[in-house]
Length: 534
Image 1 (cartoon, one colour):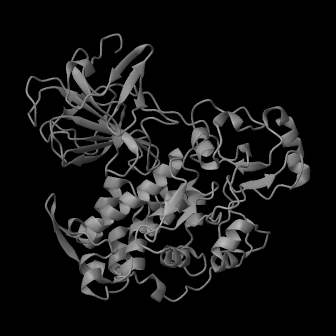
Image 2 (cartoon, rainbow, N blue to C red; image 1 turned 180 degrees about the vertical axis):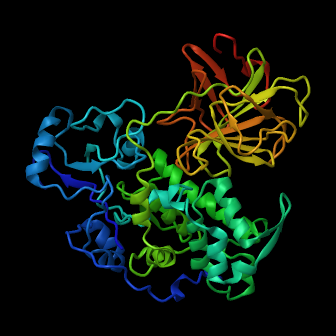
Image 3 (cartoon, rainbow, N blue to C red; image 1 turned 60 degrees about the vertical axis):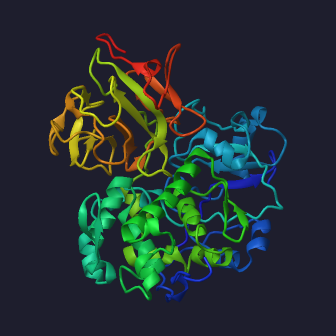
């Protein structure tokens, strides 16, 4: 059951050293334990143990380290000494943390989590100046953790691949599971202004695909909070607001899930970038996030902190009787699925070649820099381009959207086109590009193979809220949204994306050329493609 990342050890240089309408989470019986575990020692920092009391006591059981590449066996003094000595010139005499990079780690983000500068991190390997770290890379980091601060335990509750819409969900039948569970969700119907009547399973499916979030996780949260999947909600409030977020705007299961996804993604992707280092509860109490956590665990921790007190949250986080065991009771071992699917990011991953998505000599405007991929609290992964026009607003345009890369069209409809670059027919695997606000007229069909620079359709306002005709474009890899400015920068025809201080700001840079995003579509933000390149 327990996943404890044996990822970092503190050493000295060369020396060891909501009240009312509360959720129903506390009313469930503890699921039957799964399997047997061998033992290896687990050490919880004493400051954390003192601060968190019984929660940590329950966590101090022993377990076998996770078999994933990021979960190394505990390192002995004999094995770490040569590694530290080999990098001694780059490390101060202060206490040091040994941390093994996890899939998806980026050096600047790791530095933020540990509260150090990038140039203070050493390694026996040559570290990449840009790009993701290979999983398992040893990092030697100055230990600046404050012993007076309360940290959450270094326990991994759920793999990243069970939060994003990854290969672990390829064989999952949403409708079949909901029907077999036989709960309130199986007979639920809801009217949505955008698509009309939808079933409970349809709400899960649509949210999963649109937001690239794992459907198992949405089902588990819905059942954990309100018994919607395998039972019946106990009162009217939990019928109208199943997740407990009391806002009329988010009434009904679809919008409650939208709210939940925003929280999950805020936790997940802000951990990826290193911008989230603590969580705050509704009573004002705070906990520092242990820097060795994984993004999936932080997503859960952040989500459950939004509506729960610290005491409730601690019980939810309990590995033997909280959400992690509940999830496994519903869907089996998530860590086995994650291991079978493989790591989210293989070594030395790079973005494949992609071109600007419009015609040669056709003027377009770079209207928005990095902003939300789908919902507003998601990663800053999307860019917006608009065809040049003397008119404003939602107007028809003859200008073509071209495919930024070759691939198989796996979704097409309601203003949306998704192209799977590896051609396996799944947007849960490999690189995928999502194009939004593509007009129905002349839009490429699902199942069609499209080569790079082939026409796909025309920009419009279709498929969502839009103040004017434009194209919204975003990338995914193995189901995870990829930030436009980060370890894998969004690069189109050699133009690299640079984020601004706020969402929608930013620039495209190529050599000494810089184009600043302009939401008003002024000519200063115009960008062209020419026959010999942009």
